[in-house]
Length: 274
Ligand SMILES: C[S@@+](CC[C@H](N)C(=O)[O-])C[C@H]1O[C@@H](n2cnc3c(N)ncnc32)[C@H](O)[C@@H]1O
Image 1 (tube, rainbow, N blue to C red):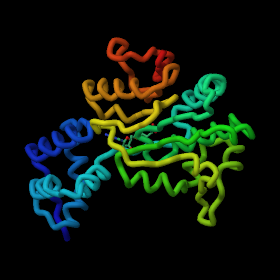
Image 2 (image 1 turned 180 degrees about the vertical axis):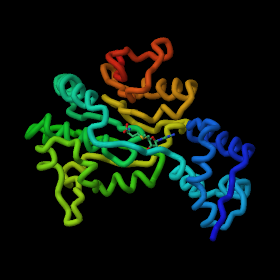
Image 3 (image 1 turned 30 degrees about the vertical axis):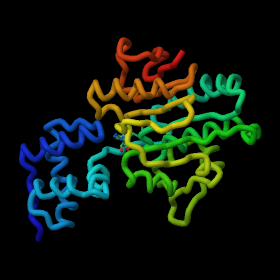
């Protein structure tokens, strides 16, 4: 029987500092037990006897794989279809009609930053499909969806969800955009899957290598784990990457200080670049 290895306060501090510096995520002391638990299997797999040994291994691993595995374990990826539905209604009723009128190139650029297992970008893709209808053929509406964790990206790319997971979707969408599998799960149809491009991207990266600006950025329930300074810097980058007239959606429990952002406040958790 393998025994539990405990992380000391000092080891936790070192690990938390490393995670904050590289991934922006601020782990409070209360998270010590959680981190301890989530990493047990990784330590056991490698036969480490202490968190110090494990941490040295992460630091020395030049392939970056150890760090990826660490973050796959640490990130909180809870998400669901139609989460914070008012955002999607605002997007459908106000943002999309505006973009339809003003984007003469017919090239819409939407980014779901911190997309987790894909429910958010797929919800957007379904909304867009319904909104444009047959006219969609004349538009490029591909959505970029990024996350730090490649574990969640693999799930997102498969696009298979349980009946319970797809429950919040309207019946008409379930009919048009999902196909039932023998297991009882539902798969997102190819037509919608092809609309979403999943990539691994760390929002703490120095450079954001995007050639064109976005009309809409969704970064919801991601910055809750960041401290104020990291958040302000990231929102600044988002602003530079937003088309004039474009939008930023954040999570409902988050807010941007009015003085700390150039975005204009539109309604709770919705901001616009004028
Ligand atoms: C709680 S989920 C939010 C998913 C979705 N946006 C929503 O609102 O339901 C937060 C996601 O942010 C990702 N994340 C955390 N830090 C990140 C970083 N530095 N770069 C990119 N993604 C990050 C996590 O991996 C996780 O999947």
